[in-house]
Image 1: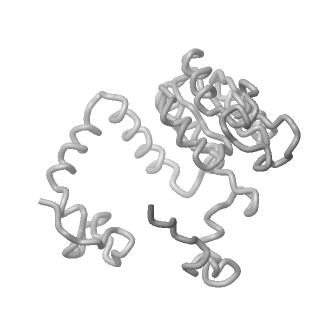
Image 2: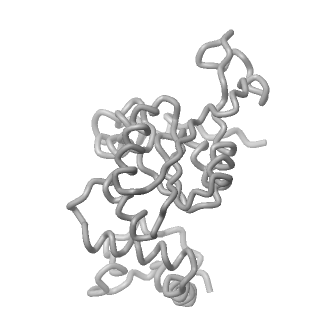
Length: 222
């Protein structure tokens, strides 16, 4: 039975779920979802896609923890899975990075296909965005098309897809439509040079506005 408690992992100072050498707090989700944990264990032990992904990820962590870059890890991960065709869903603004990434992946003997976010070239006004809300009003400005990015890679038969700088939200659409498992190589954050975690590390100083409730106005009640 689920406990009526708002506390969760972000409020935990014990973290007994990792080494299991302490005592679980009273609100621990591991204790609450014991039966579900057993079900997921069976899932990871199976020969399903989830099982293969889980074991490959765990092996990569064990073999290369703290030694390989994320770029290298994505390639090792693909190799563990026996991937022959790797799809790359890239932001148009990071196409140079995606092109170099593709070149490096191919050195590992893996075929690649890259699809940029503006594929299909549909102007933003055609999906209901006012011209005034374009980055460059009055110009043709194609909206991102992550669903089509996924479709192109689906039809190509990609076995693993890698995201390179897709916008917040567009990444969600892509992963919803991608038939192959998808992992992220670059997370877009133009302000912080694509290192979004920097906002957390500086939240008590340079970005202390993030802890001010006024920074994120709450939606008005309907």
